[in-house]
Length: 250
Image (cartoon, helix red, strand yellow):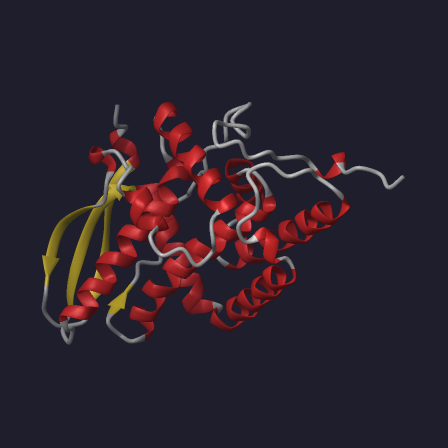
């Protein structure tokens, strides 16, 4: 069942000097961002559990650079809550009106505008992420089940710190970062998720920096739905251990 109060419209101002490649870039950026953020705000319990399971599988065992993550997730959004084009007026200036889940639209706008406002800081953080995985190449595509030894515990601690630093710069508060880590399963997978979501937001920000669109400065209060108890060990087989359960050296 759709909660109509969760759905609404966002207007994006567009410039009148586009070519067809700009329209394609906007369309792909919007759909991929929506696909990545929708699992965090999905209202239906069964849909949310299924999408959370997908996030854990993808971001634990997948590469950060995977291209079709957002596209594949978007195809799993229920049709009545998928992103709809309500109006498109092409002129100088024109606009596009989009209809969808307001929490999702709010996150998309917030992340994209964060790139506009804190571009240098986010670039530095992306370099820190590259360094993190260069030192731990086995964590780019790790095994589905891994024992929490001291090295993995240290890596998890460092990934958690990066999650909070990146999350803050992308517009997520500490509580949202904690919920995200719980949903995706562990800090390392959550770090990959934030990079993927940030990359999609960066595409939209580049259109704004190029003067082709003007994103809304949304004030929507976005609430991330927590993972259900027992959801962290789903059929994906990803084993998640808490940092305080690390083994002591003998």
